[in-house]
Image (tube, rainbow, N blue to C red; front, side, top):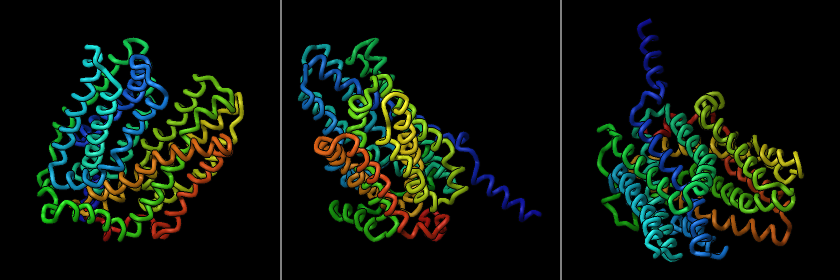
Length: 429
């Protein structure tokens, strides 16, 4: 009985609630605040450029392009820096620097010196800091929670991202209506300040601190190569990367034409389009809240390919949408996609955190950002071109099939024959 009780106590301790983990709650709050702010700025900056600087549509689109460009240019170097330096200090520095950059925009506008070039510089530099922050942030969770809590932790973090996507644009629009686009940016400043303070209050256990990764022993270029080589030689990580990249490409392609499709082909109002996207985000919120239970029921390895394969048929409801109440079909398809994205990202990120040695985890995360996020601008361009030459509805059919096809890269991988991540693979075990 004593042996059984000790095992039960150990299991209970391993599964203890993250709500009582001070470090995780600080990370969660900081990540939530840091994610909400940019969603507000995503609305405020283009409107600021249009209303005050009288920018053209092309000039405004450059703001979005510059926010994604750093993922292509700086992800790999950011991974090396995050492995060599204190990751917690990196996150706090990036939050503080982005806070000052965004704060300068309304101040410069108040002085009458705001220009498009100034906005481009702010967005570009903030993008570089965001890449560095993201790489460092994704290596923190394994240091703050137990191995068995990774899926639950990643699920909660993904849920807050979905909540930011759901509420950020609406909050930004409301604030712009009340105080104007320039003053709305103060809300973004506040979120970065809150994120910096809460992340700075975290206390990483001494047993997890160690030395700043062994990459100091090799050159910067060689350190970048180590991250690429690790992913290339690991069969499952390689499949996950291709799956994520293909999915991101076609999801972005679909999103780039979604609003146009609903307005022009379905004759929906702007309010109806907003409701569709709001309902579509609910799938991610629900899945994030129950990620740990779903993973435990299905299997920590099996859920990766199941979450990509099972919702696939529902994606075709988007091109099947009709005017009037038929637009609800688009919301259902979007909710299925949101649920898939949250569950797959939660499970695959947890897998990556488990199998990667701590000294290369940041560089592996950087490889994923470089490729999987690097295809996003290409996907947006593909969606626009396809819709131009083939039509909006046919383009959505192609995008839905493309998103579902990404599942093939994990279905036909070693994951298909595995229920749970083998203990032998866990770098933390």
